[in-house]
Image 1 (cartoon, one colour):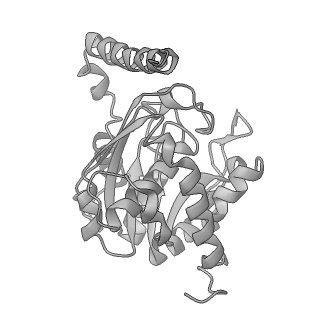
Image 2: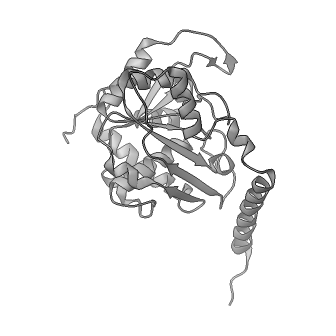
Image 3: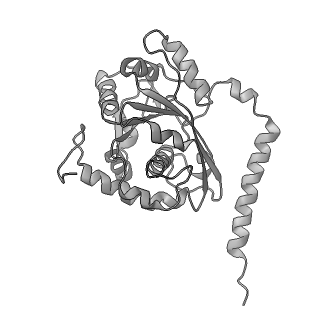
Length: 277
C-alpha cells in the first residue's frame, strides 16, 4: 500500500490503518474484558465478496455498535471464528469498511471526527436535526456516497436511524438495496445499551453479556420486490418487527436483567475481596 494512496472519499489509507489500529487497541477491553461479547455467525463473513455488501443492524449506541463490528469483521477475516481474542487481527485491518452516520453526530467533538475518518459516510437525516423533528428532501449526494462506498467495499447501516428500539425501518435503506443490489447481511446486537451510555463512549456497567448475531444473506428480488416488502423483511431480519415484543416473556426479560446484575455484583465482590497473605 502506497503511503499516499487514498480511498474514494479522499482519505489516506495509511492514516486510516493507523487510526483503526490505535482505536481498536484502546477499545478492545470494552468487549473482551470489561464486558463479554458473544458472537455467532462470524464464519459467514469469510465467504463474502470484497465489495458491494450491506450490513443492516439494530442500533443501541452511537459508536460502540460500529466499533464492535470493526473488531468482529477483522477478527473473522484474519481466521478467528466467533472470537475477538488477541487484538493482533487489527495489524492489517480491512480498510474498505464504511458505516452510515448522521452528519450532525460526526461533527460534535474530536472523537467523532476521528471515528469519521475511519469510515463514516455522513448523511443529513430527513426526519431529525438538532433534536427536533424535521421534514426535508433526501440529498442525492448522500445516496451517491453510499453507492460509492458499496462499490468500494462493505457498508454498515442502521436502518431505523435511531438508537431507540422498535422504531420503523426507514424506506431509504430499501431504495438503496434496489438501486445498488448489494448482498444484504442482517446483524442483531444486544447488551450495548446496558454496557455503555447513549454515545457508546462511557462504560455504564461492567460484566454485561453483549451479543452479536450475524445472519445469512437476505433473499431479495432486486428487480421485482416492492420497497414495503423489503422494509418488512429487514424488520424481521434484525428482530425489530413489533411482533418480537410479544414473543419475549416478561419473566425472561427480568431473569436476563437479574443475571447481568449478578455478574456485576460478583465482579465487584472479587475486586473488593482482600488477598490472602
